[in-house]
Amino acid sequence: MKKIFYTMLGILAVEAMNGQNPAPAGPQKERILVLNGYAHPGNGKVIPNSAIGFEKGKLTLVADATTIRIDRTQYDTVIDAHGKQIYPGIIDCNSYLGLAELDLVRATLDYHETGLMNPNVRSIVAYNTDSRIIPTVRSNGVLLAQVVPQGGLVSGSSSVVVLDAWNWEDASYKTDEGIHVNWPGMYVYRSDNPEKEKEQRDRMEKNLLVLDQLFSDAKAYSLDPAPREENLRLESMKGLFNGSKKLYVHCGYVKEIVSAVAFCNRYGIKMVLVGGEDSWRVTGLLKDNQIPVILDNVHSLPSRDDEDVDLPYKRPFLLKQAGVEFAIGMNGTWNIRNEIFWAGTAVEYGLAPEDAVASITSIPAKILGIDDRTGTLETGKDATLIISEGDLLDMRSSKIISAFIQGRNINLDDMQKQLYRKYMTKYGLDSK
Image (cartoon, rainbow, N blue to C red):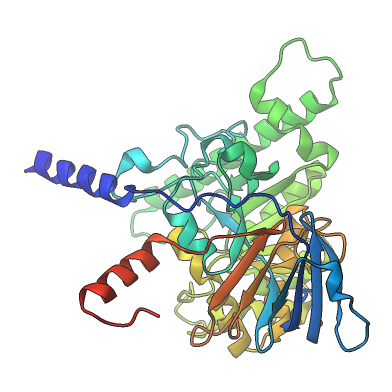
């Protein structure tokens, strides 16, 4: 019976990966002008009647069309976006997109390395551009993603990719930009058996000591101009101590956050808090230490019985109100396509619409260190943008009709749309 079960899983894996994704778009050749759209540049402002021009993959014009004189003859293609909404391409943080395909088929999972300490593991080399999930995410506006290794105490290095490429080298947008640590759990579950509580504390203390030893060794190694032997683990951590890399600390409770902040301050490391269920409780600490937060649990239940049932929905507003910089991310693969609706939920619970747009565009770009190239619609930056027929954050009206990555017109078809058209045809229905 077990053999038959695994055989069926294998068949499902083949079926799911059958066929081909749309071929990556070629470089931008024509000069393009998008007129009359309602633009959300990602900087907190709006342009009700916009003119957006781009050439050779870069934005050359972002302006109010009613205040300037535009020579249309300077452009090869003019797109009338009247009644449409224009946004920067969505950037997802803290995903393992391209590292997993089918959760039930272990051979398609490539995001978790064995062992507890793997700072030298690089997620980028395992990134699969042929994943059938990527087009389904891309068709909902997510054009860049941070690909993060999982598991252990130190999971490895993440990289930022564009979601339209032939291979991982082409997809690379910023490689090895940070190292991820899963902070040891500091919550002790009460038990009638004192030994079990002691085991939890001992495990926590042991893991903290192991982390401290690793970072102590890494800092000493980074200060040695000519180490006698190259240590791959310690070599990969050098960037943490010269400021070229950030440490992404995954934790949730107050005690863990306070401990992690003190740890990073001791070693002079730039920290980003990931998860942060209790981040709203320690906003003063986060603000004083200029630590941004990547929230990855907006659509969830509260972690404590006595908390408001809608607390996760209000968390973005509470952080914004306290002056803490945050991005909305989504840890996963296929569910990343719903990231825009997580931001929409935050709007219903107090967050201003343009702040919600910034939380999935400009702020992720700043956290990931790519804000000089993308994240907002500004001249000189990459022409990475999307056009929607309705409000991007509203699942009732959001419909992406065009997307550009560095000026390349991206094919928004995917397997789910193909199946929809197929079965609408079968039953003689209109698939438009």
